[in-house]
Image (cartoon, rainbow, N blue to C red; front, top):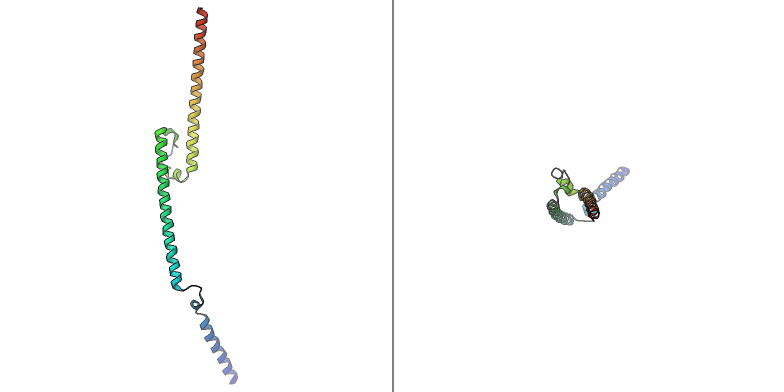
Length: 138
């Protein structure tokens, strides 16, 4: 009986001791109120970040629209051919947009240079002809 009493006492003591340690909230680093405050602070930060993001998106959209208006006023042919279908894509990928506009501008300038060089050659040929005509009349 003595052994049974000791076994029951040990088991009972283990159960009581275990129940004291299973209450993890007593040993938690933070109380529930602290956790709730931290959650609320994080929610406020998330809201502020979202507002900042929305503000930046609005500024980006306005800048892109201004850029489109300026390019269109200068020469609409500089814009990508698919600007209407992919406007949002180009707004989100400004490097791609810039490369296309710069490529179109380079082509336009090379074309203008070639045309002006041809005009200069034509003027040079005309001046030669005029000089020869004047010299032969003297």
